[in-house]
Length: 100
Image (cartoon, helix red, strand yellow):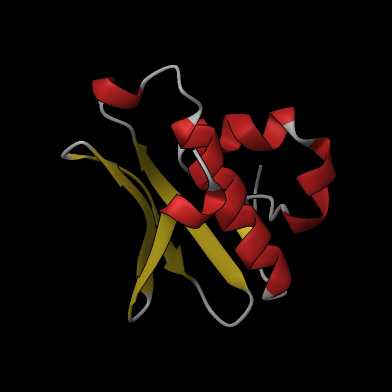
């Protein structure tokens, strides 16, 4: 799977990264929270894509785009949060939850 196969869709304050193949669709959804913050709130990968690194590729693409845009990321989605823990090189983008 190539990063170029992942499409970004923006709709106002919300958006998603989507990968489609063989009639199936995987996605990472996000919301903008102010000028410099993006919240990754959901990762959905159908069984057809499990074990192929699709979810990781979606999060990686989102992180690359948000870094290029100068945004911080709050990964509320458990899968995205786990990816941030596995990638210490993304720590500069991490927006910690206040009060935790």
